[in-house]
View 1: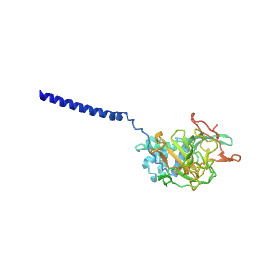
View 2: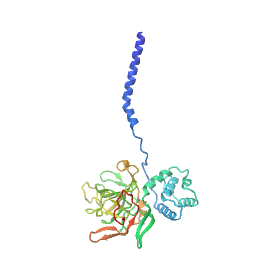
View 3: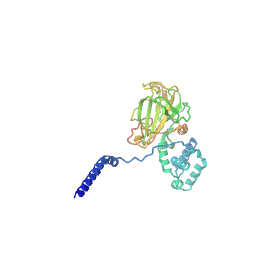
View 4: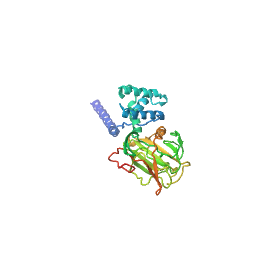
Length: 343
């Protein structure tokens, strides 16, 4: 009898101990069960497509648009990136021309890229970088509005205004703290008109101690954030520019200066006047600011865009510059149309 009672007491004790352990584990288990699944989106993009390839892929896109089957430049670039494992030092023009010939002979893109790993990744990644640069638009000619298809983005520097640049993405910067340069510097004189590369909505406008007077414009699809910094002291922005305003590719948005590197507003803290132009890719809003930011090297893109600079004109009364040629493209309903031939 004593033995049986002793066993029962031990069993009850063990059950109580197990119960207490289980209760202690409930909060942590609850946290595991309640933890949201990690979002599935691209976390990083290396964009190092050479200028010669960008130019030829663009030409092929435009050529096949009028005499199909149409081959988009993003698909061509994604195919070659997958073929080379992202290493464009392996690029040979024969690879691109061979792909175009196979597609012209009736082979599908799926057949062409079949068996290439990461092709869909490059399609999405390069589509995010280049998505708003090529398409249909209208330009005002001598006989009215004319329909066009092709490169619709513009250089960040206005036509006839000189500038110099080199590939400086990733070089060291030390103001505030040691960091990598995540943009592209275009050396130009103070007052040079700065141009909206792509149509979109003004998302940021004002002072930043690193970038000085700066403008941030988000593309209509939300994937690209164009950043223009170190604008002119005292009169940095185009007259009337405001946050929330829609601008069109080719619009004047500000003027080159050398502001920044100061916690105090409106200070010329930069030695040499230049435009800092940066392109951030955003697959998820959590990447907008912080450790998850994706900035891409735009040097080759700026080389390509040098072929398309926006002609501008100066108002002698206001001393303001504006675009000289009317331009229109499809604008989402939720975005307000704004000037410069948009109406």
